[in-house]
Image 1 (tube, one colour):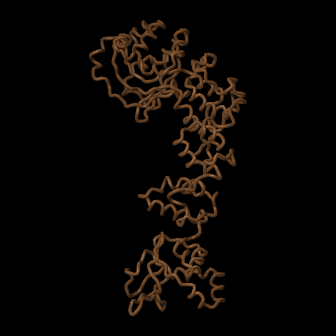
Image 2 (cartoon, rainbow, N blue to C red; image 1 turned 60 degrees about the horizontal axis):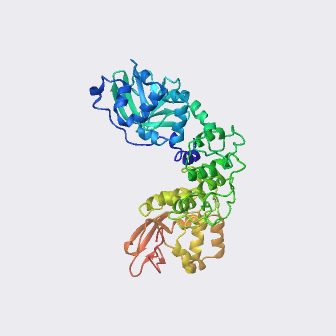
Image 3 (tube, rainbow, N blue to C red; image 1 turned 45 degrees about the horizontal axis):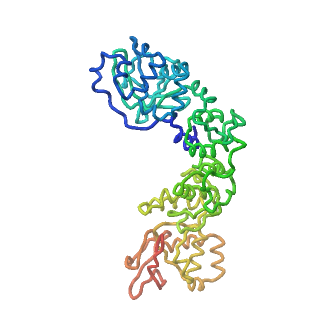
Length: 480
């Protein structure tokens, strides 16, 4: 299903989820047991005792003892242990269903592990197909229901075929539908026990209809898991009895207030903010805090914590285009602001943070450049204002900043002309140097600026061209 379904359903349906484990190599003792049939090998292996007892009960032992050839994808005892006892009892009471389930694990051909092809389907003696996948671990199962078992042991050779052990009991859609009335776990999509209003309705961000989800709920036997599942899926399927408040004490907004726009669907959340509130209600304290940190800002909670670590704008100031899309990241400035501390905010990735800021500051409307010491020094306020106005932004640079006294010496009409015609930008570039130069780094002679060349003299006093350097080495976040 979708990620919302995966987060909710996959962890809690023991009978429909493949457990991941290592891929076990081929049985080196295969030749020693090749004179025994599949059923005889199963009877001799204590790991298959539950399967063998069900095969005997269904009257299929003679079939698996025939000439074949067969391939048996054999659920181990551990696989059966994951299934509620009342499900096993139900299978034992309905021989037709039991036979269908067992024959769905048998293919009418001998297929060694080396002959299993990723993505191929194999028709079983039940009549439905099994699909083989290999995502670094081999698995076999029902592609439509997304019920797979990992192949945990391979190539157990018999005289009439081969056995591959799996860690899941596999079922078809026809068998799953029989559990609608059986309801082994007593968990319904609607908390009040009523049927979903529209079983053909597919909620946003789900691939399954509400009717299909009802089938999957049959396998939930844990009361806490059922309550959490109902809080999400019940609301998505519009159950009249679905709780309006979250199960548990976790709210998406850290302050506990209602989400301003519950229909908002932020990038990465993959469901609406309102639906996500239903899901996180049952989370514990630690998981709750993580979700609030990650998503409350995206859902526009007034109490959302300020982003940590790497900010969009180098000086940490607010940006003016929160909804602008940044093509490089395929998200808005607000969304990137919430995620940037996770992507670039650790102490070892300062360079990554700087690169990100360089690439997005203009698109997000960051004030062009912020040097905190310029802002804090009242005698440099005009230089600071002009730098912001200019739209210039550089990282690791040096400013030879005219003081307010220097600007006071200019003809006011000239200053107005420069600012009104943007000529001041070229003037400002003549005050900027690429790289950080402390006073101890200055040497007499020419100095390349962003716009032209200036001359440094140190004797009898430090100067740049004809201007005195009256103070030096004001270090800021992105320069000096």
